[in-house]
Structures are given as structure tokens and as C-alpha cells.
Image (cartoon, rainbow, N blue to C red; front, side, top):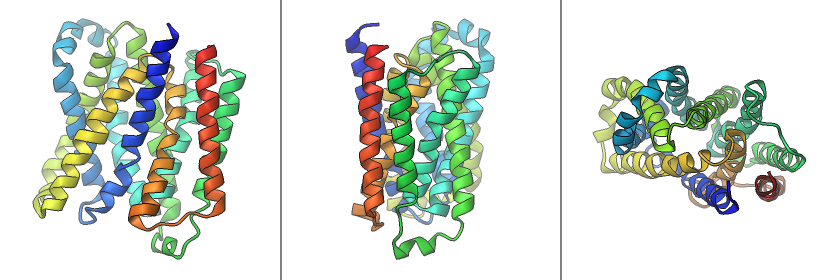
Length: 297
């Protein structure tokens, strides 16, 4: 694999992280929508759109997808669980903590999964980068010391749901990567995984989806979430995931909490202490080390 493809993969996942970082703030503009509904709409519709776009390739590669259907089933279930846990975590503990815990836990969980499946062996640069990033997100988690945090009375439950989100995020990234390693294209792997996951979320939208039409704002937020962070974001993520290991991809997406935190400060009104800014700096150091690790690998 040449250097340019790895560089493009890094840029694609950084762009994805920026898009994903807007989701928490976007969700605050539709407070009447439950986190379960908004997560189902975002990932459900976004996933089905990916599937529709990839349908010609999915049909051509259907025999291979059926051969490795266990990866597809596991990944689809993880895709369906992830948004429910992620958006509930942000609603219960705040945009900053919810995003930081969900995304910050994923690299560790990805490495554990890949270690036991013998898919990845961390380099020194990767360990230094991941350690810096994980410390950075921990600093971000404990930095939100403004008075507004008293509004979040269920932080412990929010953190627990964030860990579930991190696990499912790591798991569907790994399962999609496994399909790619079996020779299935990135479009088919991501389209099939997210399309099936999206279908699993459709019953939730049908049963509790009426508030989507209560206001124009609710509809705009829902459309934005489905088309931009989820549909476009996961297209870019799938491209990156086809070039580099899932654990590396999830580590690069530690940039997402940085974007989410900055937007939470500028738009939502949350504040950040000095330790939080140190955390952001450590995450950027993490990205530098991970980039070096990828290029040397």
C-alpha cells in the first residue's frame, strides 16, 4: 500500500471526525426529540442511504457477503445499538462528556478486539499516540466544571451508556474491516452493514417517530443528521477503514470530541477549563503520533 493512499485515509477519517463532532450540538436544537428517536433517524436513514448507493456492488458481491454473513450480522446489531447508546449518553451527561466517553473508549476496545483476533500489533508510536489521546479525552471528561453541569443529574448512567457506545463503535468498525479483508469492497461492506443496521432501527422510527413532524426545526435537524454526519461521514469513514486498521481509525476519530467540545462552548454555552484545553492539545499530539505510526508501518 503506497503512502498516498494512507494519507488520503487519514484525511478522510479526520473529515469524518469533524462531521461527527457536529452531531451533539445539532441534537440540542431539537430537545423535544428523544435521544433514541434522533439516534434511530440519524443512523437508520443514513445507513439505508449508504445501502442504496452501494446496492449494485452489494448485488455483485452477494455471494461473498453471504459467505461471511456472521460478520455482517454482528456488525449490523452493533450499528443499531450504537446511536441509541451514544445519543442517550449525551442527553444524560452533556455533549462534552457523552462524546468524550463514547469516542474516547473506542480505541482501547478496538485494540482489545483486534489483539484477540490477531489483526493488529501496536507499534511504539501507536502506543504513545493512543496514550496521549486517551489521557486527553480523560482530561476533557473532567474539565467541564461550570455551573451548568448540575443540570445533568444522571452522569453515571450517561458514562455507562457512553462505554456501550464505544464498544459497539469499535465492534462494527472491526466487523466491517473484516469483510474488507476478505476481499469485499468498502462500499459493499459498509453499505450492507449499515443498511441492515438501519433496517433494525426502522421499527423505532415507525413507533415513536411522530415528533419528527412537530416542527420545521425537528425536521431540519433530522435531515441534517441523516445526510451529513451519518451518510456522508460514514462514506468517508468506510474509505479510510479500507486502508488502515479499525483500531487506528477509531484512534484518529478522537478528534471528534475536540470538535464537539468546541461547538458545545461556542453554540450550546458549555465552558471548558484549563485542564480541558490541555486535553485538546494532547489529542492533537495523539493525531501526530498516529500519523507517524501509519506512515512507518
